[in-house]
Image (cartoon, rainbow, N blue to C red; front, side, top):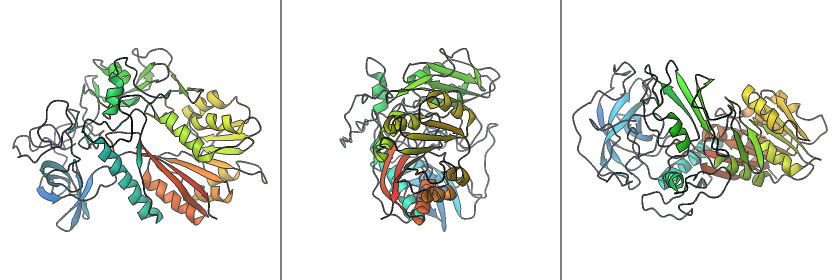
Length: 482
């Protein structure tokens, strides 16, 4: 992230150590003007004629990716480390495009009331966190604005959106906001929650938007030291103590070196406390026990093989499972398609609801996820696990002609299910589709396709499962238009 000159941190104001106070306007310093936006060799990453120029900008709405929109000299400027309504001095970092530039705020001239002091000492350098300078309630409001704008622009829908904090991530956010949409200081009680310390240390981190990420991939430098990369760079910030990493993950990386490796992956099980460490895909001596940690969600056990996807927030598996089941209300004897079904998280809960007289068809193409799903739900009565890439043809072949498909779960990667798949699903006339998405733009595109095929958005929930970042998880419920 961009920094004020010589500070090594994003624009900030006065405040004691550990406080999350609003940043106030500050004067610039002059040292280190060329240090930002360099590649791993330290040479400038300039790519356009205006790179390095400084502009005074009045900052507008939030944009996809977490920056904000401003305008200068007849073009759009995407500004990082700024907030809507602020006036900032920004340094141009990429002027290679004719229609828009990119810039980093280096000085806040007029601060937003939502601005706070970033808790992480490398927040101005790391490419991982977009919003460490934003209070947690404001992060949720900005994410809601992003979702609403994508639905308006791509689906033609004007929908009120509220982004819900996950259990254990409460708005006693250290900024005195007190907006009251959660009970501060407890974990929330789900099997997938954090708060493992008896002294409440983990819960305190979670309530501050930290210590939540149970799966992390770090780059490794030539000395074997692990850490995140600088923004838009291959350079490794070695030995950085990642504050959003769960304590089990952070402890496994702290003080370790991984000679000869290019990257290290660390995963912690919230069910067992087991930690898996893999350097360049191979088990590391720091691993604690089995190479396939087990998780437990909604009364079901899951093996998650290396390389298989699992939600990174401790509360996410339980929260999303409950949300999907609540949205679809599966009934005994119904048929359900779980597309992009992963390791079987939703399929297990759906099978519990439709019972032995119903059926659940899980479709997944990733080999590690598919093998995990086969172990987790493949032996259950009424569950079929199919190793296929989701396509219109696969949708057509889910059930024999004449058999009804009652319900569908879609949980695709960021690219979304796609117009053709959504259109083909609508032809099967399920009574409801639950669409889980980590990308509001592709979700809005596919909601529009469903609308053209006779389905309408009847419910939308959004969850702040990635605090300090601009990422957000959505659950859209689509039903036939009557």
